[in-house]
Amino acid sequence: MKRFVAQGLKFLLVVVVAYVVVFFALTWLRILGKPVIYRTNDYYHLKGGNAWEQHNDWAKGARYDLVVIGSSHAYRGYDPRVFRERGYRMFNLGSSAQTPLSTYAILEGLVPRERAPLVVIDVYEDAFVQAGIESVSELTRDMVDDRTAISLAADFRDLRGLNMITLRMLDKGSPPSFADPTYVGDGAAIRRDSARSGVKYPVRGPLRIDPRQLERFIDCLDLCDQRGIQVVLSSHPYPPQADRAQHTAFVAMVDSVIATRPEDRRPRRFDLVDAPGFDGHDHFYDHTHLNQAGARAFTGMLIDSLEVKGILQRR
Image 1: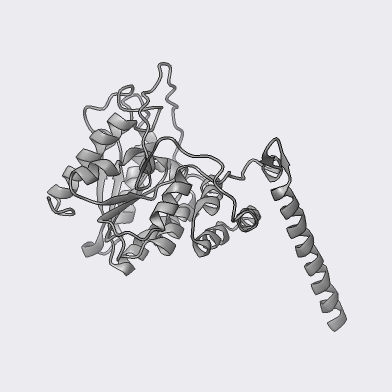
Image 2: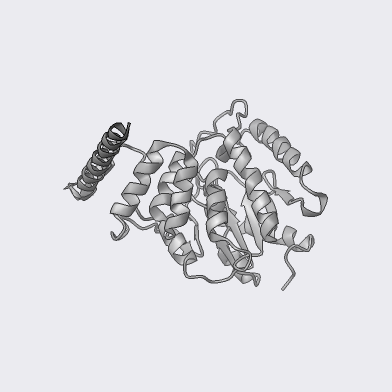
């Protein structure tokens, strides 16, 4: 038996060493200036862009009045410059295709109450219907904190997460490969472009929530309750042409979750999907994301709502 165990351990050691050696070679061998590892699978994310700048800015340790978090609706649609003009300090921790699984890892590892007593979670149905590989890949490359990145990859429960962390650790000292020219600071990237003519607005099918994403969403609320962080749930405007059927079902699901929370800790929800005055061309740069004009208008509306409810104190 001891011999069998010893042989098994030796085999495991050989496999681990071979895995690391091959991965190292694929990471450092370049073709046309690009590491070969990126040619082996399409889920690997290049280091850089909004998430890299965002997490390096957050790692500086400053305190804020509030944090906004969520998918690309968050970092593209909530403008920290408008908050600053109104006298508030806001940091945006949204990222591409971020799901509640990724949101939980960020909140758990990076957002104590001392840094932000208020968290605004952008709730968008698309974030609840996917496994989250795009978000995990981006964040494990661009986060500054190793523990949070490892925790996220482990919670993903997919062997591809191991590959992502291995790439992170073997390529740790490299500079970012690209920058996001729309980055405006404090975690946000705001585009000036307006939507082009001919934008297609897909008709959405039935809402199919991923059970793990719903579970992690509830975990996010529980975590903030435990830390004494106030939570607001927010949805930004949709173009008038966009299909609302799936969102209607999603709102009902979110409201059912809110109803289960202790009455004194139920998060406020601001659904501005149908806010008046938003034009599909002038206020959006594609079929779903706000442009600079739209983000400025929406952010002002949200601040007004937060002040009216006493969540933010007028300054």
